[in-house]
Picture (tube, rainbow, N blue to C red):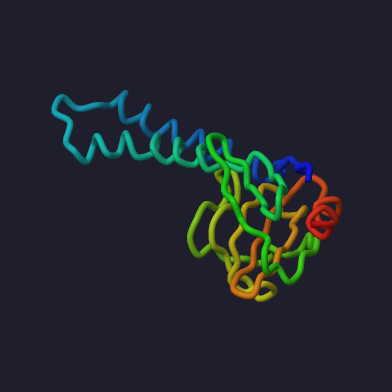
Length: 163
């Protein structure tokens, strides 16, 4: 079976959040270094390094796209891919409103993506690998729910259904 690949387009909101947050995370260490005291404490050094580490880590976890191959969904990252087996999937459907009114439980809420555990009344608790909430596709399994946002949600649903 030939793998089917989809891009992960960024919404306008994600672009703005990423630009704003990146600017802030870069400005903090620059500002602190420009006002550096003679004797720098450990806390001061952490305040310089933590924003940069946050930015680097978030960049590594960004979503580049999705690939369906051999009964698996691969979430493509800059340096690796996350494999999700599609075995046992009970339903898949495009739902542009799926992530509406969600609360982030754990994860990233807008720096290079919406990635992690979320909750809302519509889906309950779910895991998201999203970049444009209006392109949401919901994959339901007996024990979990997953949301991804491929560039063509209907084509993605067809590709998953055809497995």
